[in-house]
Length: 563
Image 1: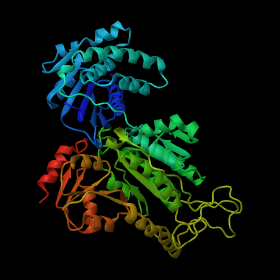
Image 2: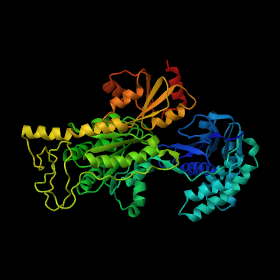
Image 3: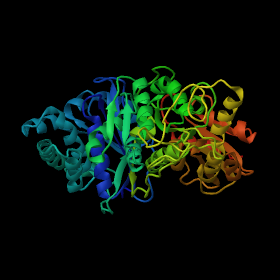
């Protein structure tokens, strides 16, 4: 049977190379010509516990999310067999070392002497992972050269390691190919135009660079740290100052200071770090200093589930910090949007001199999708004073738009002064009630233009039908996978969450039956619908156990509530 769709899972103890093996599998399938989605789950441990990496591939159309049923499993320990063998489709199989098979009672196991093979080649024991993956590709009739290319790509810059693994892969592939009759499907091979395999965190980093990022600060935190790692690796060639701060407070305040001096600055964190940054968010708002905060959400509260996903920070992002001030909250649904919106976040921050919060999550940040190309986007400068400041320059000049000219320290003819207390047009502290109200009104006038942008660009619509499914963030990908083959459903994705594009959502939904799906316990998007549209959703699907919504469960929910 032709392998038009397939799902492969690699499982084993954390620290045993599961991530590397799964990533190589995903790359190899892209090189075969498949559209690929890949995701992984791991415990909050350095070693031990159970980890898995799932790769879903589709020949026609896009693979958008995970699947329950599996075609093949590479088991690096017996626990993987115990936990996942029940998910195999009819004709599915497990590839594992003979030692693992001896301790397993599962059927349809392809047991191979992988440890013996690796030892005979003088390779390190961990190379059993690549031997097993190559054997799996051999059983599936995959293309060996595509697999070897994926190995060399993953180990680029480590040529010796790449060649050791390539030799192991060749031997493992030969062993698996002898048993190709065990597979109920065969991999297709027709390489297509070069495509990216891109995760959400890397997409955010690339988007920030496209937006002219010149300063980035972060304190390491799961699952946002890969953004820091990416930017630290390219900082010299990209011309970006990257700071690993001693804490989240230092990260956000150095970013505010850098922006005050003229750098396009951003920070990245997760929920616990964002909580610590809340007071500084107000500092950026009061001083009208452009700031971008990327929140890669994880399950909370408190430490919560550091390595699992959630969409629980939406309401917090909209209201974080004391007092009232305009801000923008954006939520990408896939890597292309993460790239676009990270760039746009910097542009908005500088155009309006407001804090912009980009809400990602662990599922989007650490999953991979095949991307054909990234859009052409770039930096747009805000109202920054260049050259000599005009006579009578005032940093917080009251303007019709609410946005004041921004001179940088050192600008000739300008006194550059910022104050986190309420201040007058020059930036000096004031408690005069008339001035206080005037400055509050000035800042809030920015909201009119922001609201107009939100209404124009804040909602995306897919398909048509008498039922509308409303989602935000990474749930978009799950929804697109769930709705394959379902007729009569219109998918509505809210991209701008603050200001909320109420009229655009109202037009998109119309009189249709309204369903909402999201990854939190209280239905935070649904609550925004009630608040802004004065409408009760007809049904709401929530998941809040640290895992993303399941496409099959979402499809069943839609069918059950279509009316």
